[in-house]
Image 1 (tube, rainbow, N blue to C red):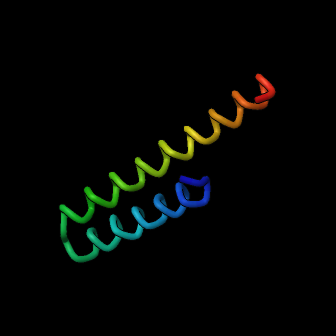
Image 2: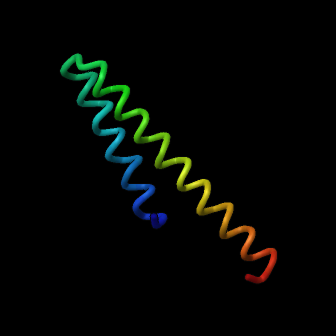
Image 3: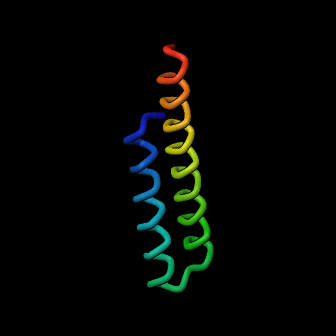
Length: 58
């Protein structure tokens, strides 16, 4: 997954969380939060991999 896709996942998750709050759907809120966290984890993984590549020259 690309860096942009990871950020998109975070945004999509935030939208789901916000909509869930607005309509009182706790399940949707939790699902949105989970999606945000997965996107953030993927973003961190990309940053870490980029950092390692820069340090090792690979």
